[in-house]
Length: 250
Image (cartoon, rainbow, N blue to C red):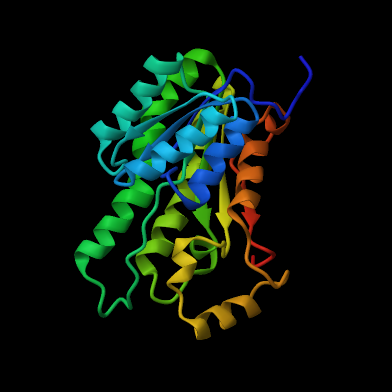
Protein backbone atom coordinates (compact mmCIF):
# COMPACT_ATOMS: atom_id res chain seq x y z
CA UNK A 1 0.00 0.00 0.00
CA UNK A 2 1.35 3.40 -0.93
CA UNK A 3 2.33 5.60 1.99
CA UNK A 4 0.05 8.58 2.31
CA UNK A 5 -0.61 11.59 4.48
CA UNK A 6 -4.30 10.69 4.45
CA UNK A 7 -5.72 9.44 7.74
CA UNK A 8 -8.83 7.93 6.18
CA UNK A 9 -10.17 5.09 8.31
CA UNK A 10 -8.12 6.02 11.36
CA UNK A 11 -9.58 6.81 14.79
CA UNK A 12 -7.97 9.55 16.87
CA UNK A 13 -8.30 10.77 20.45
CA UNK A 14 -7.09 14.30 21.14
CA UNK A 15 -6.98 15.36 24.79
CA UNK A 16 -7.62 18.98 25.71
CA UNK A 17 -9.14 19.52 22.27
CA UNK A 18 -11.72 22.22 23.01
CA UNK A 19 -9.44 25.16 22.22
CA UNK A 20 -6.03 26.33 21.10
CA UNK A 21 -3.54 23.75 19.89
CA UNK A 22 -5.79 20.80 20.73
CA UNK A 23 -8.64 22.26 18.69
CA UNK A 24 -6.35 22.82 15.69
CA UNK A 25 -5.06 19.25 15.95
CA UNK A 26 -8.57 17.78 16.10
CA UNK A 27 -9.65 19.79 13.04
CA UNK A 28 -6.55 18.86 11.03
CA UNK A 29 -6.79 15.13 11.77
CA UNK A 30 -10.45 15.19 10.82
CA UNK A 31 -9.66 17.11 7.62
CA UNK A 32 -7.34 14.28 6.65
CA UNK A 33 -10.07 11.70 7.20
CA UNK A 34 -9.72 10.52 10.79
CA UNK A 35 -12.71 10.08 13.10
CA UNK A 36 -11.91 12.20 16.16
CA UNK A 37 -12.86 12.02 19.82
CA UNK A 38 -12.65 15.57 21.14
CA UNK A 39 -11.74 15.37 24.81
CA UNK A 40 -12.40 18.23 27.20
CA UNK A 41 -12.43 18.72 30.97
CA UNK A 42 -14.66 21.75 31.59
CA UNK A 43 -15.24 23.57 28.29
CA UNK A 44 -18.21 21.54 27.08
CA UNK A 45 -19.62 24.23 24.80
CA UNK A 46 -16.31 24.82 23.04
CA UNK A 47 -15.83 21.08 22.59
CA UNK A 48 -19.27 20.83 20.99
CA UNK A 49 -18.31 23.65 18.63
CA UNK A 50 -15.24 21.68 17.52
CA UNK A 51 -17.40 18.60 16.91
CA UNK A 52 -19.94 20.63 14.95
CA UNK A 53 -17.19 22.18 12.83
CA UNK A 54 -15.83 18.74 11.95
CA UNK A 55 -19.26 17.35 11.17
CA UNK A 56 -20.11 20.43 9.13
CA UNK A 57 -17.14 19.66 6.90
CA UNK A 58 -18.33 16.07 6.44
CA UNK A 59 -16.15 14.45 9.10
CA UNK A 60 -16.85 12.22 12.08
CA UNK A 61 -16.42 13.45 15.64
CA UNK A 62 -17.74 13.02 19.16
CA UNK A 63 -16.99 14.97 22.35
CA UNK A 64 -16.13 13.23 25.61
CA UNK A 65 -15.62 14.79 29.04
CA UNK A 66 -12.73 13.41 31.10
CA UNK A 67 -10.12 14.72 33.49
CA UNK A 68 -7.08 12.85 32.16
CA UNK A 69 -5.28 13.28 35.50
CA UNK A 70 -7.60 10.54 36.81
CA UNK A 71 -6.79 7.10 35.41
CA UNK A 72 -10.36 5.78 35.43
CA UNK A 73 -11.58 8.83 33.51
CA UNK A 74 -8.71 8.52 31.03
CA UNK A 75 -9.54 4.84 30.53
CA UNK A 76 -13.20 5.73 30.01
CA UNK A 77 -12.11 8.17 27.29
CA UNK A 78 -10.21 5.48 25.39
CA UNK A 79 -12.99 2.93 25.95
CA UNK A 80 -15.44 5.45 24.47
CA UNK A 81 -13.35 5.75 21.31
CA UNK A 82 -13.18 1.97 20.95
CA UNK A 83 -16.91 1.50 21.57
CA UNK A 84 -18.04 4.42 19.39
CA UNK A 85 -15.70 4.12 16.42
CA UNK A 86 -14.31 0.60 16.74
CA UNK A 87 -10.81 1.24 18.01
CA UNK A 88 -8.05 3.79 18.45
CA UNK A 89 -5.13 4.35 16.11
CA UNK A 90 -3.91 7.81 17.11
CA UNK A 91 -3.57 9.31 20.60
CA UNK A 92 -2.51 12.93 20.97
CA UNK A 93 -1.66 13.79 24.57
CA UNK A 94 -2.23 17.52 24.43
CA UNK A 95 -4.10 18.32 27.67
CA UNK A 96 -2.03 20.62 29.85
CA UNK A 97 -2.24 23.35 32.44
CA UNK A 98 0.08 25.98 33.92
CA UNK A 99 0.33 27.20 37.50
CA UNK A 100 3.31 29.53 37.25
CA UNK A 101 5.24 30.96 40.16
CA UNK A 102 8.76 31.24 41.53
CA UNK A 103 9.63 28.12 43.49
CA UNK A 104 9.82 30.07 46.76
CA UNK A 105 6.18 31.07 46.26
CA UNK A 106 4.88 27.97 44.51
CA UNK A 107 2.29 26.02 46.47
CA UNK A 108 2.55 22.27 46.69
CA UNK A 109 -0.92 22.01 45.14
CA UNK A 110 0.30 23.98 42.11
CA UNK A 111 3.16 21.53 41.62
CA UNK A 112 0.90 18.51 42.03
CA UNK A 113 -1.83 19.79 39.71
CA UNK A 114 0.55 20.48 36.82
CA UNK A 115 2.37 17.17 37.15
CA UNK A 116 -0.94 15.29 37.45
CA UNK A 117 -2.47 16.76 34.30
CA UNK A 118 0.54 17.19 32.05
CA UNK A 119 2.63 14.13 32.93
CA UNK A 120 0.40 11.64 34.70
CA UNK A 121 -2.34 12.41 32.17
CA UNK A 122 0.06 11.35 29.42
CA UNK A 123 0.75 8.10 31.28
CA UNK A 124 -2.93 7.46 31.98
CA UNK A 125 -4.13 7.86 28.40
CA UNK A 126 -1.15 6.04 26.89
CA UNK A 127 -1.53 3.08 29.25
CA UNK A 128 -5.20 2.78 28.33
CA UNK A 129 -4.56 3.16 24.58
CA UNK A 130 -1.61 0.79 24.14
CA UNK A 131 -3.60 -2.44 24.50
CA UNK A 132 -6.17 -1.73 21.76
CA UNK A 133 -3.35 -0.39 19.54
CA UNK A 134 -1.42 -3.62 20.07
CA UNK A 135 -4.45 -5.65 19.02
CA UNK A 136 -4.55 -3.73 15.74
CA UNK A 137 -0.74 -3.81 15.44
CA UNK A 138 -0.79 -0.13 14.45
CA UNK A 139 -0.59 2.97 16.56
CA UNK A 140 0.64 6.52 16.86
CA UNK A 141 1.12 8.23 20.22
CA UNK A 142 2.09 11.90 19.94
CA UNK A 143 2.88 13.85 23.08
CA UNK A 144 2.62 17.64 22.98
CA UNK A 145 5.61 18.75 25.00
CA UNK A 146 7.31 22.15 25.10
CA UNK A 147 10.62 23.95 24.75
CA UNK A 148 10.18 24.55 28.49
CA UNK A 149 10.99 20.86 28.96
CA UNK A 150 14.26 21.30 27.07
CA UNK A 151 15.62 24.68 28.17
CA UNK A 152 13.49 25.51 31.22
CA UNK A 153 11.53 28.65 31.98
CA UNK A 154 11.91 30.72 35.18
CA UNK A 155 8.72 30.61 37.19
CA UNK A 156 7.77 27.30 35.59
CA UNK A 157 9.64 24.61 37.49
CA UNK A 158 6.45 22.54 37.64
CA UNK A 159 5.54 22.99 33.97
CA UNK A 160 9.13 22.51 32.75
CA UNK A 161 9.48 19.34 34.83
CA UNK A 162 6.21 17.94 33.48
CA UNK A 163 7.23 18.63 29.87
CA UNK A 164 10.73 17.20 30.35
CA UNK A 165 9.05 14.16 31.88
CA UNK A 166 6.93 13.76 28.76
CA UNK A 167 10.07 13.63 26.66
CA UNK A 168 11.63 10.89 28.79
CA UNK A 169 8.32 9.02 28.78
CA UNK A 170 8.19 9.28 24.97
CA UNK A 171 11.63 7.77 24.50
CA UNK A 172 11.02 4.91 26.93
CA UNK A 173 7.55 3.98 25.63
CA UNK A 174 8.80 4.10 22.03
CA UNK A 175 11.21 1.28 22.87
CA UNK A 176 8.51 -0.75 24.62
CA UNK A 177 5.96 -0.80 21.82
CA UNK A 178 8.02 -0.57 18.61
CA UNK A 179 7.72 -4.31 17.94
CA UNK A 180 3.94 -3.90 17.68
CA UNK A 181 4.16 -1.23 14.97
CA UNK A 182 3.32 1.58 17.41
CA UNK A 183 5.37 4.76 17.23
CA UNK A 184 5.71 7.29 20.04
CA UNK A 185 6.98 10.80 19.41
CA UNK A 186 6.90 14.21 21.07
CA UNK A 187 6.58 17.72 19.73
CA UNK A 188 8.46 20.45 21.59
CA UNK A 189 6.17 23.41 21.01
CA UNK A 190 7.50 26.93 21.28
CA UNK A 191 5.54 30.14 21.73
CA UNK A 192 2.22 29.78 19.96
CA UNK A 193 -0.70 32.20 19.65
CA UNK A 194 -3.06 30.77 22.30
CA UNK A 195 -4.94 31.93 25.39
CA UNK A 196 -1.80 31.36 27.47
CA UNK A 197 0.16 33.88 25.38
CA UNK A 198 -2.44 36.56 26.10
CA UNK A 199 -1.55 36.38 29.80
CA UNK A 200 2.15 37.09 29.23
CA UNK A 201 3.20 40.67 30.18
CA UNK A 202 4.29 42.90 27.30
CA UNK A 203 7.92 43.25 28.43
CA UNK A 204 8.21 39.47 28.78
CA UNK A 205 6.75 39.03 25.29
CA UNK A 206 9.48 41.23 23.82
CA UNK A 207 12.19 39.20 25.55
CA UNK A 208 10.65 35.96 24.30
CA UNK A 209 10.45 37.21 20.73
CA UNK A 210 14.18 37.96 20.81
CA UNK A 211 14.82 34.28 21.64
CA UNK A 212 13.06 33.05 18.48
CA UNK A 213 15.33 32.97 15.42
CA UNK A 214 12.36 33.12 13.04
CA UNK A 215 11.22 36.25 14.89
CA UNK A 216 7.55 35.39 15.31
CA UNK A 217 5.10 33.29 17.28
CA UNK A 218 3.84 30.04 15.85
CA UNK A 219 0.23 29.17 15.10
CA UNK A 220 -1.81 26.26 16.44
CA UNK A 221 -2.21 25.06 12.86
CA UNK A 222 1.57 24.75 12.41
CA UNK A 223 1.67 22.38 15.38
CA UNK A 224 -1.31 20.48 13.97
CA UNK A 225 0.45 19.91 10.63
CA UNK A 226 3.39 18.32 12.47
CA UNK A 227 1.02 16.07 14.42
CA UNK A 228 -0.73 14.99 11.22
CA UNK A 229 2.60 14.07 9.66
CA UNK A 230 3.70 12.00 12.67
CA UNK A 231 0.31 10.25 12.60
CA UNK A 232 0.64 9.32 8.93
CA UNK A 233 1.97 6.25 7.13
CA UNK A 234 4.88 8.34 5.88
CA UNK A 235 6.21 8.73 9.43
CA UNK A 236 6.23 4.98 10.09
CA UNK A 237 10.02 4.86 10.61
CA UNK A 238 10.10 7.76 13.08
CA UNK A 239 9.81 6.89 16.77
CA UNK A 240 11.26 8.06 20.07
CA UNK A 241 11.95 11.50 18.61
CA UNK A 242 11.34 15.07 19.72
CA UNK A 243 10.31 17.36 16.87
CA UNK A 244 10.81 21.04 17.63
CA UNK A 245 8.03 23.26 16.32
CA UNK A 246 9.38 26.40 17.90
CA UNK A 247 10.88 28.74 15.32
CA UNK A 248 14.41 27.56 16.05
CA UNK A 249 14.49 28.21 19.80
CA UNK A 250 16.20 24.89 20.45
